[in-house]
Length: 346
Ligand SMILES: Nc1ncnc2c1ncn2[C@@H]1O[C@H](COP(=O)(O)OP(=O)(O)OP(=O)(O)O)[C@@H](O)[C@H]1O
Image (tube, rainbow, N blue to C red):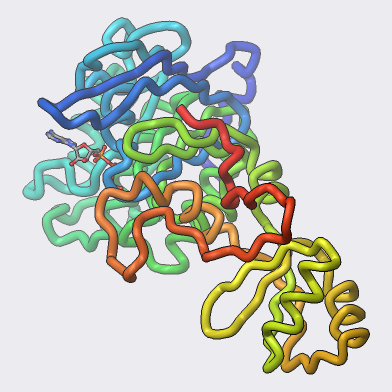
């Protein structure tokens, strides 16, 4: 993908990063961001993941100096946002769609932004081309779809050829082709040595794009880990079992020291790749099996488990937030920890 410029890679000796230290934001009684400390590094895509209301947008607003922290600090390349000379050349951000005057054309909106930030007018055409809006450059933005609006917002973020890009839920409103495009754009930007910080409430989206993950819930840090580690830790493998002789099988599994979890509707689950162990035990005790199938839990499931206690608004399913299935423990075994319970909690 041609972006029309490549400056960041040639300047990559300069470390461009975002650093948060004890960052906190209160709105009255509400603690929107709670003592967040982490670093966003260059050359990779860092996903900022959390359920709705977790504090992602508030954090991003504080990075840009749009909200003042109640406590703590956030720095871009060691400086506060308001200390940056020509800030759009340091950090470009997409915060919310349609943050512009609807009566202006896309071209004029970007031209105003360029002129007020010391950016050459020639960049406007380049970024319109990059985001695929050249054909509608002279059209008034009030007629733009949500997807076109996102593209215009991204054009604004790219305008100053910044080394740091920050996107708040950029795939919102984009069609599949648009989603594919933004993923590739972010990968290209990171491969040029830029710092790419992108928020989402969807684990599935992050799994496809992010190299590193920062997970928050109710403003608190829940995980700060590489995507590869998150997948390795959370792609839990287990065996799903259905049997008409539940009691006999439970007794046999317990006697063999195998931990089994009842997951409802008569289904039993055993952690790990233990199909053969379970199958042999069942045969030895003459237990009929209707199902014995190896499974792998989805990352979405791991993310929901990790953030279960911190989700602000639940669609109630009769379970309290964070509830884990009732477990049958063999005698003398410690209780099983819920998945993700060993993640760093802020
Ligand atoms: N100006 C404000 N006044 C009062 N409360 C606010 C304000 N802005 C945000 N909040 C609250 O702070 C919390 C964090 O909100 P924020 O928008 O940062 O979350 P988010 O992770 O970006 O969520 P979403 O994915 O829904 O955009 C929420 O409970 C929200 O209601």
